[in-house]
Image (cartoon, rainbow over all chains, first blue to last red; front, side, top):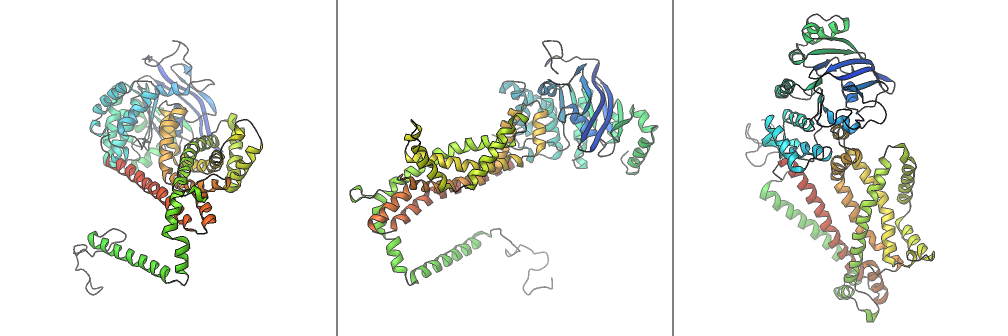
Length: 264
Length: 298
């Protein structure tokens, strides 16, 4: 987002409505392996989209492309009408709008929880330390982690670590959150606490793209569910429709396997 | 439990204080046993040394207290220097070299790991540099710098003391090694940490400075300090340029008085330097571990 003076959304001035994300003809390969083969997707502001599909179907890659962690091969991605995949885009500015949370938390192990959260606001948003810490503590309080602020990540449970990672992404005040299978590395009894955090985010109107294997959760929270297979979006429908009467054969097959595994 | 006569009764493992233990300490009894075994081993070595046929001669030539003291304090009127004073030159050379090596090696490692196409020629240069200086014996580097640079008769550059050329040679050689240590450390930080840092909007420089480097350096503190223990000793090689460091002073003593006890003095002084550094390394590692596991307030 090259955001020339006032032309686009500058930090702190989010366009509150309209189309937040537009993806057109997105292709991405890793060597000979073409992971994304023409993705088209439009996401409205405040919309929550769940991406489902088998492992290797490209859900994670799609999210990483949106955060510009993976350069794309062809196609384009725009945020609020501004292309972010062209030349001369300030990647760091884009990332201030688009937060991402990973399956494996990826907290910084050599820093306390508080420092994990304040680092990017201090260095990228240039907040003074006191203000960054105040904001971080407000977020930690909201997500029930204030008593862990001085702990190092490996002292926390998986659920606490993942919540801390979500807080860390939120501390940059993103307009869009990308969640990449954030409960897949957790013990079953820790999944709920993380899903609750995501529900709360959805309730505040956060625009979210969520790659997940939690079908029940996807049905509850998503405005739309996209089923990915073979590097394309095979089916894109509201959860009430997609989970009850999937139209594509591959979707039907995938959901049947999920039901047989007792996950829906 | 029908195995073993006198084995513990079922359900009583560990209650007798003789449960199966591998390397774990067993309290006071284990301390006593380990002290006793240490004493026995040491005593055996001393006995062998004392009973060897040439023992008296070796003790006179290498460990003569009078000569050791004379070498330690020195006597310029008799033509030899104080080894105790000369060790300060080793310490000063070591400290100067260490700081310069830490900086130079980091730059070399970062250049080698850079991915930008613009940096390609520098990547090649740093690779050649590392290959060259790891391959050439340090002694040859010291001789080349120490005798070669003055022979150039350049202003300033060619008029430095032997110790300065020695430090320059140590920096050239050790930076190649230490850059590889850094490189291993940087590679040991998982790529997901880079992704996490960049995804938060941190610039490449900030990611490196606050996320990658601290973890990389922490991972390589032991090998890094290991190289510095080695560096402390290698300052002795600078003596070949005529700098009066501990080893050179000891050599002058031995060739003046024809007694090698001065070398024993130098050895003891080097040990006094290196052992604290080794213990310090252990403490740094232990402190870092306990802090991360304890999760205490800052």
